[in-house]
Length: 144
Image 1 (cartoon, rainbow, N blue to C red):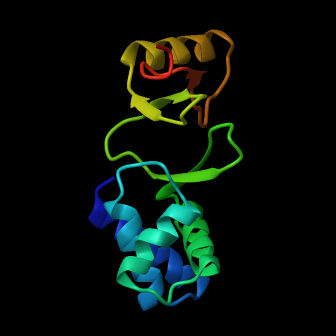
Image 2: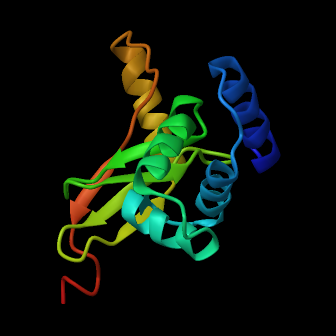
């Protein structure tokens, strides 16, 4: 889904919920879509405040709930007690390798894994609606 489509989907979602597009909400959304990482609320708040120092934590929290609610952001838990957010991928599904020492998160794509998951689901007569694969271990720096 392209950024323009995401923005259109969000506007439709806000309208359906009877919510307005505010300056603070727009600043948070713009900052979120500029990120290329899995960002937590505190990191996002820090970045947004560079543009708009008046934005509060609760506004960031509610805005991210809106983005996940309308399906243009994903909430992620990587086993460290923090909730992180990422964009819905534009083109394909991806999975994650997570370093248990430094917290580094690496995204990867594998058509072979995707195909195997589909085969397994078909064999078990299981309809998959969503899935995630997370591999935990040590990155190259931390395993030395």
